[in-house]
Amino acid sequence: MEELRSLKNYKPSRFKAEGSIYKSRFADSAVFFVNNLRHTKGRWYGEPFELIDWQEQIIRDLFGIVRRYDECRQFRTAYVEIPKKQGKSELAAAVALLLTCTDAERGGEIYGCASDRSQASIVFDVAVHMIDQFPAFKKFINLNIAQKRMTFTPLDSFYQVLSADAYTKHGLNAHGVIFDELHALPDRRLFDVMTKGSGDAREQPLHFIITTAGVDRNSICWEMHQKAEDVLQGRKIDPTFYPVIYSAADDDDWTSEDVWRRVNPSLGITVTMETMRNAYEDAKLNPVNENIFRQLRLNQWVKQSVRWMNMEKWDGCDFQFDTKTLENRVCYGGLDLSSTTDITAFVLVFPPEDEEDKYIVLPFFWIPDECLETRVRRDHVPYDMWKAQGFLNTTEGDVIHYSFVEKHIEELGKKYNIKEIAFDRWGAWEMTQNLENAGFTVIPFGQGFKDMSPATKELMRLVLERKIAHAGNPPLRWMADNLYVSTDAAGNIKPNKQKATERIDGAVALIMALDRAIRGENQGAYDERGMLIIDPNHPDGYYYSK
Image 1 (cartoon, rainbow, N blue to C red):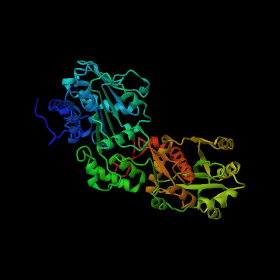
Image 2: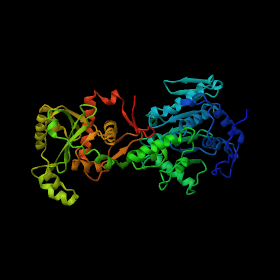
Image 3: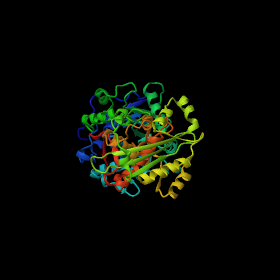
Image 4: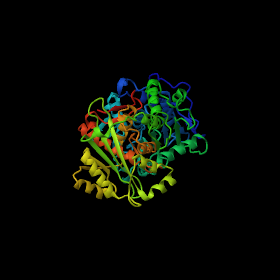
């Protein structure tokens, strides 16, 4: 065996059991195999996959620490939680290949699992490209790309990406399971099937879990995180469990570069300090991006919902305009119906007519007249003053009369060229049918991440760049200040109506109208220039996907 680059001052994990030993021969063999793999992306492509110290520590611990009496691996479950861009996928691919090709497990079954088949394929594809550059092993590999399966012929062992319905398949006899981004798993069914009993017939099965922190503290990932913390802190003893967490504590200074260095073990190798600084600068401007920075860059379990709008930036868009100049001009509407006793919001967005123009926002609000004084006392919100100032309309009685709102919108249609009206498809069918009969084009608008995220992110961009004009409308400002957003595993965002303790109807209506304005005036600007992506790595904090 040629001379190995070796981890300086390697010490076996402090979780090595009294009945276990460290077999350097086993560990050296695993490290040697991995160091003969090649990088598969970017400027590192084709270069030897020389393990970074933290990666080598894990490989040596997992494959070198064995039970004294039978020399089988001590650790059966490894939980590795680490920030993004640290070499996570490469390490997971290396472990998958070690289990498939070097473990002397005849008929070994190694499965790649994630929230969906596409996510699980990321690690598999890295493994394929690694093997493609490893001639000594490539000749022993049968590859089926369509099925996402590779077979190591000398042992008849295979590495297989599981489909999304894998949890329905029983009888699996897993020698190894690679779980990528466990935090994104929608429920625990797949995890339970793959980790509870599927490898009972194997001598030394290994469940290798590698993930960034998540947001859902009712998930299987949070359960595993808690177990890892308990083992790390000595509150729980499980000799088969191997915990690794690189994370900033809740009370750590998230702005400190010393903290960044401590929790990003590949900093300066796979990710630069300049990238971290750019991400931080963007995070300072936007609470959502602060959460993303904390979760992805510092590996903190952040709240799923966060107060969103930077009100200083919002107030910077208090550009005044004369509504008379908007007559007959093309615009798009967003309609958010309340319950019959709450606020109903209708917002018109006028797209810019030239590069110097802005998106002009014209909102309208309605509340039942008989509820007005009660709501002022109860909510401590000046609805009465807003009505006197002309920012809020009332309808007769103690409930919203949607017919009154319909007539108002019809009158607006005579004054402005309303191309489309987007509406929350829940609970608005009768009213929108009436509007359609009156000659309007009405578009149902989903309230999930897929539909809401593009325009919600675009709204923030327009506010930050001062390319929107709202004239300081007080009810709309109040609602923008009330806005919380939720973030999913892919970084998509949407308004969180459950989290918001105050009304956000106007903000939601604005987002829907803005979406239709962007799509309508640019034949789908999200398609032409790409989807707006909020990216802490980008100097501007965002870019358009191609």
